[in-house]
Image (cartoon, rainbow, N blue to C red; front, side):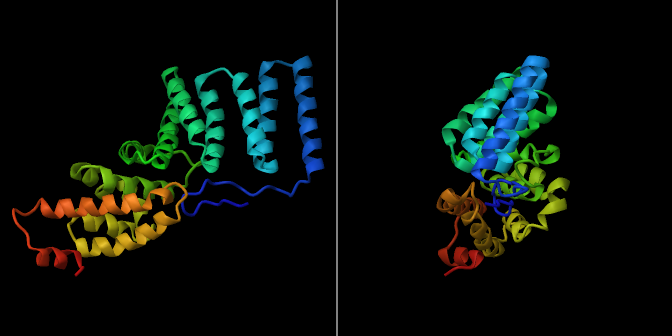
Length: 274
């Protein structure tokens, strides 16, 4: 199954060939033999590297995520250093995002946060914000997800999980829902990083700018298209009704805050509805 990222799907490359069960079994035996030889003749680093190579092959070629996770965790146990441990956990998290294993995701994200405290490098710290942000979208903690994603716009390197264009989509739709107006202005509307890509994402530029500029008719016109994407997004589709309701309330509140009194007729005209 090819899951090239177009609407929130985990990015994966297709296997280089179709493997039969016998071929997979034989390949795993070859890995096991090399690992045993490394145990006898080489050191712990070589054993770990061989185990990691085996896990990556099982994930990418055999596509057996259950077995791959088991082997990755074996490699994790053999690994020293917070940053290297986080690299392995990121591989596991990517698989569990696709499996929608929320319990495992919660546990591994928490472990990664502890590894950050233990001294993981800058790159791993920044990538963890993206992994955690995606997990939080799955469990509908949109406010914390928004904070994490918007704070990562200028430092995004997590291409193993998301393409930059898709990351910007999540950052913007989360930010418009949860961030205050000052943050939206700074981190979305006037952000050079967002501006460099937002026009390439259908309807997103009008969606953000129309809300910020209080052009509610254009906002709702683009909102329809944004919801179409949310409906098909693997991370957000289960929350589409909640997102639609809450995003409408953001617009209504913003409109009403400008007036001491407002008629239904004026409001309907502003929003382009009956």
